[in-house]
Length: 179
Image (cartoon, rainbow, N blue to C red):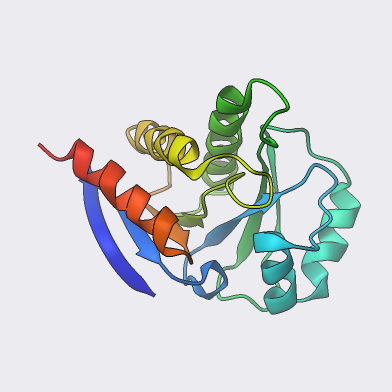
């Protein structure tokens, strides 16, 4: 885990981290999920492989989450106590920007509803869902910053990605906000 950038937002902290989301030591990690919460590939598959079958079993009980919304399960064997499953849009389905913003906001609202203090999220929809990283990153970053300006239990948010490109795009976005 490498902290590439740290930004203060009022009294809260936003970190850009290059590393494995499943290794994050936070209250909750956010899973880039599909609506049926079937966690076979991408970030979702890695989370279930590391956290255990309980995450998929709890997801099966939830059943369905619409695009732009989020649900929560326990974190199984992960360091994070919870996994928040945010359903972002597939590129090309229409209104992708609005749906991505809604998914990020919903994930953070779920964290606040559960009085969580720290959350780590990836670049939702920018992997196997095909949302161009250059378009997704500013939407995710701005949504997180806007949320962090509200009074909630969430004090720290990490934007955690394993790949160099996504991580560097988040750093560039953070640099735009300074001064």
